[in-house]
Length: 272
Image (cartoon, rainbow, N blue to C red; front, side):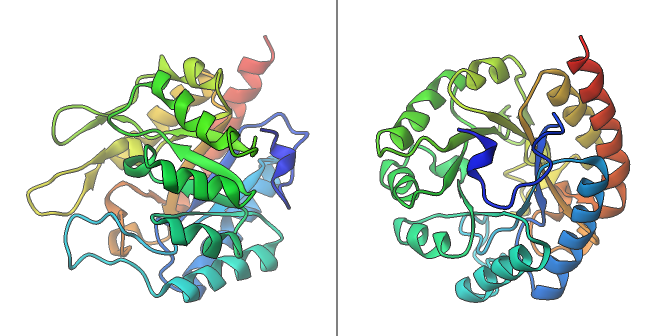
């Protein structure tokens, strides 16, 4: 997998980590464009290769009354508009085999959610679109087990896959990142650290997932020091009122400062 495989991806000669960032879910056109505009401005200034992230629907909710989306086609069209407006690639997650071909018409990268990464039919359907496939490591899986998920993609003839670590279950209501897994997974494919989902606190009695956003920089710094190829950060200008995963998203106003410090760390470790 080469980053050059992703259409519209810029700043490839900067030797920076690449970034997947955006809201958890597409709530509407105005919010998506507003977030994308700000992240594009920041990443262009810092020379970070950037992919806009937004879920066109949320199928894995704790409660039946949780927000799941604004309509599949409507949200996918917004993702396409973000891509066309800012000339950037986009990524969204899929949950069913039928989602693969549909979403592939609108985005550049198809993401397999962590809960579903062992679903062979889903992984194969994503791979057969010819798009880049982002395989999120199951919270219940070892780093070593991810080589099989990568191989499923490659067995279709698609070499364009990477792995994203989003933490491992630690008891019933917490996640932990085992940084020993990063060099292991990098042997199989480029590896991304999903900073914000790694700080989730799932299975709360309220049925609404909690989080530890104050630890975002701690986890992100450790990921960069341990040579992750990319970072995944969900961000929103109003996390408290976001319709999905607001408890662990980064407030957009803090993104530039965070990325500035992370780029400085990256430059330091690559100078040795």
